[in-house]
Image 1 (tube, each protein chain N blue to C red):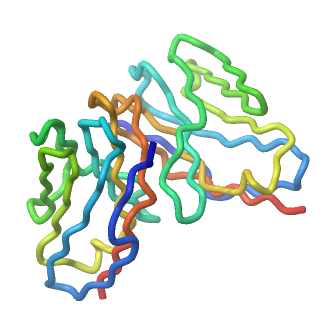
Image 2 (image 1 turned 120 degrees about the horizontal axis):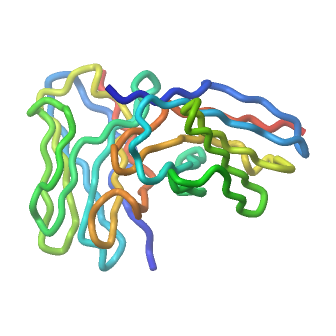
Length: 113
Length: 107
């Protein structure tokens, strides 16, 4: 089975722009979660989608949003980018939701200049 | 609030044992996980321990849980260069991850 894939792997954007990141879960997995990883803050949970519905949400501003499609693929959008949004964004898929059995993708490295 | 702390770096010689430590403030989690992150890759679940256990051994990995001191550790026996990575402890049901320990193994 193919693992979790994320595109693009690297991205450079300018402050004020918006960005969309994509995540394709493992086939058959219905849950996708997104995390932000930075050297200072470590790993922080953004949100979880299950069967196209947002089920859990972390403590991030409304500039961060996401969605999930009927094929379980998920996108994450960040609007009005700030320098502090520079991070590695990881997505993880799970067969039945929750956080006990998650498989992580390699991440998208976003740099905001 | 909940907090999980790890030392930032650990450097060991190939063949020695490595011990990565994690201290936490919340003791209500059912499981405690250890993840490994290699360069350019996502997190990979290495091992986990139930909160009602004191120790778990899995080949070269030994997890120790001291609930009284709220201390979790991961011991890697016979450390190899392929073990060089960042290691995170985590509470999956609290969605809390440690800050990560970068393990460097030198020949």
